[in-house]
Length: 113
Length: 119
Image (cartoon, rainbow over all chains, first blue to last red; front, side, top):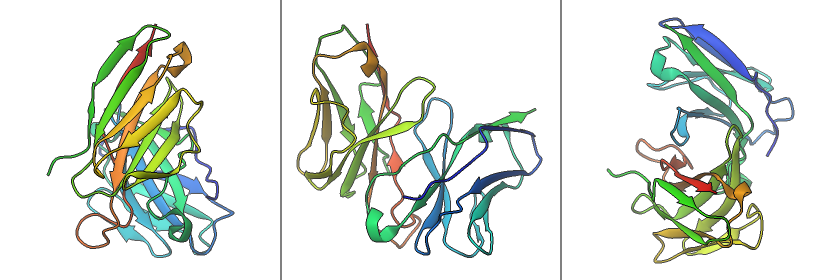
């Protein structure tokens, strides 16, 4: 799996939008961009994934650069419960179908009340 | 429905003892994974099952670690002759290949983990 680069930590204020960046300059044409997050004392949970187009779901939005070398996870209105470590992961379904996830160090997001 | 469950939630053991950690995946999920997370560290892959077979054991750190899965469901991770460096949270995840419904392709669902402390 190709590597991703994320900031170690970020802070944001409650009820404000949060933009979490991820760089993946060696992404291949078939890599999907996945985001997971890990709340304190819990296992990771899926957030969102995409290939080329921007994606929205009830948790977040994923904005993917036109050249796909970077992406941004957007939390539209952060709450205290969004404080977690956010992982940006690339997965190629041709090779990683039902296989392991390689987690990097992620971004630790803190939310100020 | 029920999520991935793991037991025990906490385990304290003495160095040199054997321990067994259990994972109950989501019903119908064919793939099962074990990861571990040491204090302040990232998630480290250990082993992956497809059905009852383990095509990828590349993450097991030593031959003291083994895992099995029976009936395509429950899995047990066994650590023999535990060492202090084995102290970590051991996480289990399961996934299916469904592409319809709420679950996206290949999403992994994680359990709450077992916190293992080796004294």
